[in-house]
Image (cartoon, rainbow, N blue to C red; front, side, top):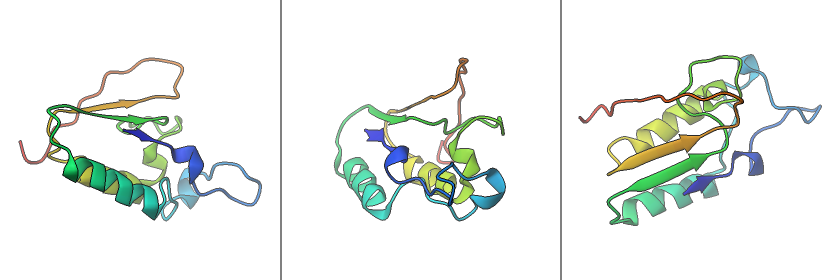
Length: 107
């Protein structure tokens, strides 16, 4: 499942991505995208679920473009993904490599 943040991400007047301080209420995905993602996950009987995001999800690096610049959206995503069977989260748009792990609150 591929999340297309550039289709919806909230932009400012200069058409530049918002800075961390102005993104608390910013949106990465629209409600239609959230509904689609939730439907895909809840109706799936797959053993593995691969979620792809073109911006990083788990990084704590404040310089990189990431879901971390949209804290409410990131929390919503992580809550939705919590407990998903066989979850693999692939995210990028960074010019270096990282392998990050996050443990589900249910395990």
